[in-house]
Length: 579
Image (tube, rainbow, N blue to C red; front, side, top):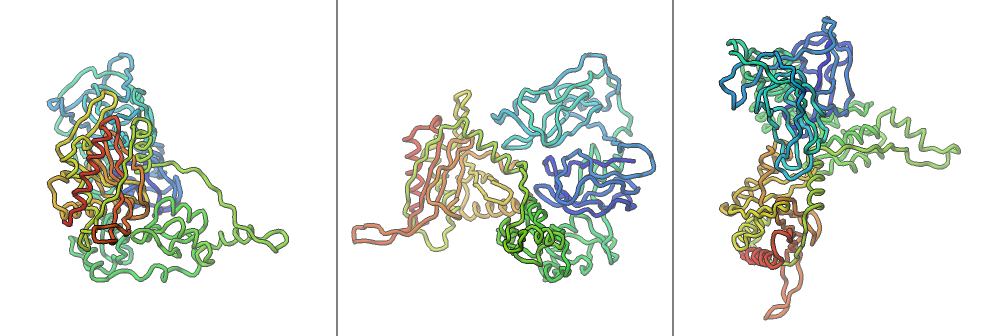
């Protein structure tokens, strides 16, 4: 018996949600056969089997969140062992490139404890995202040991010495305080010798099949497997299948252009552009819905799918009202009024609870509410807000600027980015970083604007670099590209860091004035409200003016009120211009 644990799916996140099991207990499976569809914060991927055998136990059901490294599936391969063997080639650290192999013997020296260092973010803790080593591994100085997530980025923590790993203090998802134990070394290495040419051996199947996509494992590259499409002689990778589901393309109807009847991404996109999509999902639903429709067919967050599961609502019957056709919690609740949207079992439960003992009064079915852990973007946002509340001394100045001169169709966001860049040149004190502990301020010559983007998964702030030297069309094109990749959870971590000042354009939704939150080490953030038309007294009488509300928050420790006011005035000068 072998237990397969959830591997790092290459997303830099500590867990993944079970979307759909592709096997069941008692099934006989082959190596590389897709077992389960898992959703991370960025994508849905298929996890293939590393073993051949019979499925003994599935650890979790649809909707469950599984932590990286936790048991996912038990497979009876006839070996009688209880743990899947893992072989990882020894990596070559940068500072010891001349060393090709480390012996496995260790000294009897006392165990040494490595504590989490300050990761340079000004934060008191960090979350374990993914261990890059395991207990018993032989490690070398500067070898990456673990990925840790702060409120701003995911960073690798290198090994401080040559040695053998004794204890890992924490699991993926655990928050470790700065200065708390992170790794205990069982001992130091007793010797070094040259490695044979075969040391960087090809990883075992258990390594090669754990991650979807082209993945670097030690010194080798493992490519994702190609599997057959049911009902045809065509083949496709898990990524191609996921893309087809997203675009609602029937893979069995595509003419493949890849080798050996394999379908490429270009084939899928071409079919979608030519209208070769599947018929409406609702029309295909069977008369007796089970309430367990495949979430891959719908745009819905894990929280929304969990609510649908608790209420027994089939997502196919929900009228999507969210952004880009996504299903919201209200859509799920509204669907409970449609009898056909609720599974038979759930309808029976509702019927039993909505009728009183006398049968004359009705009441709503009871719903159990349970706490939910904050993860990913929402956790980073919560940490950033807590940090700001604890150390920033905020001041907010508000004013209105007349933008009546703007031509019809003016890109408001691009104009705001340009105005921030202009004001940063006039009053550079607000474009920079402030270190409150050391009482140091760094004024940046470049203007890197973080633009707050609201998504169902939480707040993302992509950074537009060098706004001071870009055209409006260029700024808009880059912002559109990053917003699109945020929607598809493909934004890179380094694209969310490095801002020197921020913009929150909440007025596109609602609100006139606000008190935007300054996130350290930044000094300032501009909030723009919903513009309005109002009467204005002019030299020739009363006219109509289009007014844009502005709210500028800044850290009063880093700049004076006068500097903040002059910055706001400079913003208004640029925004009043017709072009």
